[in-house]
Amino acid sequence: MTVTLTDVLNDVQTGQLHPIYFVQGQDQYLLDLVRKQFLTVIQPEDRTLNLAQFDLTEVPLSMAIDDAKSVPFFGDQRVVILDNPYFLTGERQKNNLEHHVEDLVNYIKQPEPQTILVIFAPYDKLDNRKKVTKLLKEQARYLSFVNLSEKDINQFVSDRLNARGYTIDSEAKQELIRLTNSSLTQMMSELDKLMLYTVVEKRIGVTDVKELVTHTLTENIFDLIDSLLKGQLTRTVNLYHELLATGEEPLRLHGALIGQFRLLLQVKSNVKSEKGIASELKVHPYRVKLAKRTVRIFSYVRLARAYLGLVSMEEQLKSTARDPELLFELFILKYKNEMAE
Image (tube, rainbow, N blue to C red):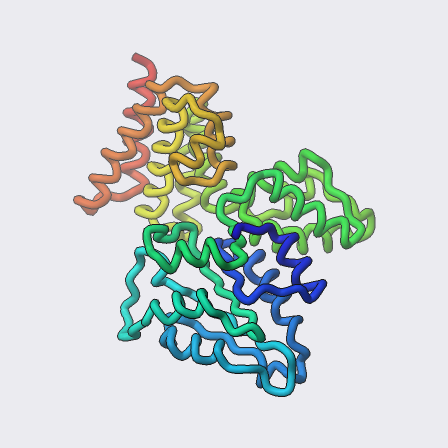
């Protein structure tokens, strides 16, 4: 059954624990938060005997399930944690491990009452056609961190700051979300830096965020695309040069540019709500929100010509030894001429 983070925290705090928990999502901050909660179930002096953690890319599932079936030693409960159950996805691992998934299926149907089995699936997508995946979602306490809403992210940030006695201006919070591409893990890391910087006044403003928060590749891509579409071509070229100067790989940078323009075109031609588009395209809702702001201003033709020009440039990057910076400058000149027609 699907539950919330609050439900899980309440289970741990009240001691009313269920036999199986299934946690899905790629946000490391939240995964670590949940893991720490389950570690508190077993007293430190008992963890050697009553706490076990298995990485399923390294050990067979049958070994972990056998351990989960074991009764606690000198205690009332055991906690068994399974990491990286890649067999729940369509992924294939390059190892010789043989996982007997039926062992997990049978355990779900009849779990050991004194064991709390916690399965962490650090993936955005699972293979929902598989029997074991369906069974986990139905029978376990299923907590998903996939596609957190902006409201959820805002709440996590506010809770973290309130607990330390800090406040953050609304504009500053939006800028923090934008600069970190709504990655909660990165946001929490940046908050530590911001709180240290504003330790005296305990109030974080937008200037603090702009000065201190590290720009991600995604954010730099947003800036580059924004300047390109606005016709600030000299700035666009300079930004491209700067990104390469920091060691960014040309093909990786180019792939990010093309991916973002593809998203802009998809959002431009889609009449659904932000949530509906995010679900259809399987991207974070905040990316769709930012894309919508951009496509309101610029025509489909302007977006399409930039996209096609970048695709053509990528073909040259892969098939010739020409300098990436020269190719980008030629793309800019061609794009400028097309927009002048």
